Amino acid sequence: MTLVVTREENYKQQIIGKINQLEEVNDESVLELIESYVYQDMLYNSVEEKEVIIIQLFNQIRRLGALQPLLDDDSITEIMINGHKELYIERKGQMLQVKSEFKSRQELELLIQKIVSKMDRKVNEKHPICDVRLSCGSRVNIVLDPIAIEGPCVTIRKFPSKKLTRDDLILNGTIDEGAMEFLEKLVKKKYNMFISGGTSSGKTTLLNVLSDAISQDERIITIEDSAELRLHTVKNLIRLESRNSTDNLNNKIPIKELIKSSLRMRPDRIIVGEVRGDETIDMLQAMNTGHDGSISTGHSNSIEDMLIRLETMVITGTDIPLLAVRQQIASALDIMVHIQKINSKGRRIIEISEVTRMFDHRIQLNSLYNYDEELDKLLPTGNMLLSQEKLKWN
Image (cartoon, rainbow, N blue to C red; front, side, top):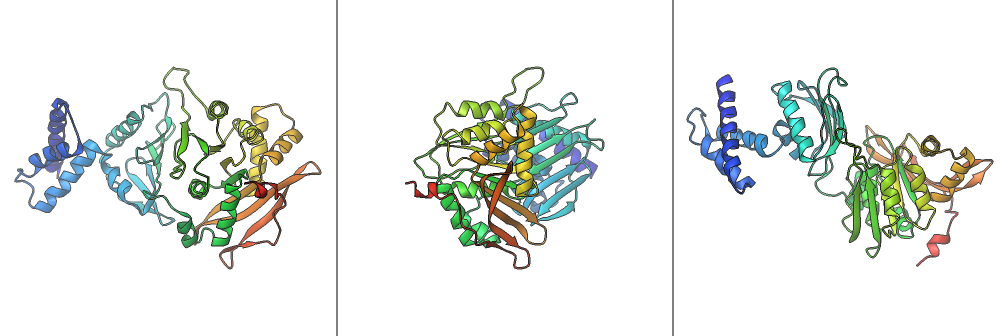
């Protein structure tokens, strides 16, 4: 086995050397080079074995090595690497441990550098934490030692190669037809909306689906830490992505700055992928200053928890009194949607509520839909939407 591995590594180095001499390199030319080496090697016993080696070498040279088969598997939604010896995946909502194909820690570290270099980022002992995205859109979080005690940790959140539609969400039981039509109507009529939920609950997917209801004649600006949104139906679209500082350069561009800049770009709506900190006040002010129909998401366990988190995020970044913060939130947000991942069932929208008014110094909610666990269905509460003004807009 050692001999085979050594020969493959030798082939790899020779092929890379030849690639560096070529003026134009594409996948086809690299594949032809690999095939010319492997097919003439008599040590491999069968055509099937040679084809496996060809794919492995191609993935190492042009793709992401041992990770590529997992990235190509559409049934896998998450890849979790805990050092080079432990590898977990999430498939159909279940976490499974699979055999790690990394032969050494060095192989994993080289792969990490390959990932970050493609996105012009750096991760090292001085800056051991990095967030990047792959060309396919998958989101990657990297943590190196000494922060990660057991070795480099890589977590990859994959997104479906085919964008999920409203019909997919209905078929999956995430939401029913009636509730989906209700949310789509609110998006069309430019109600400001906030989607809350836990990690991997489906917030971005739901936002993507609801964006299909936006009129094609609108100018939309999306703002994200890592670009994940896919608004295929919007023609006049500007996508902005924040930037972390690199090396010793003070070149960080946070979401807060992007929101402020977007206001000068004549948007009809602003969609902020997720708020986590002091950019929250800028998002709320944008919603309050003529950018109706704006949407954002955030992490929480419930709609009530999300409102408290929004308050905390604003107060942490400003000296605005709590009562004024609550008034800002109540004035900016129209609809709150909470989505949750239920292990035995999948992703479900748990609640849809209307943000109504302030009473006794607190934000009041009008619950419109609640999830019935026994029926596994989102049911209307019977409460009417109180704010009807935007429904009258053309």
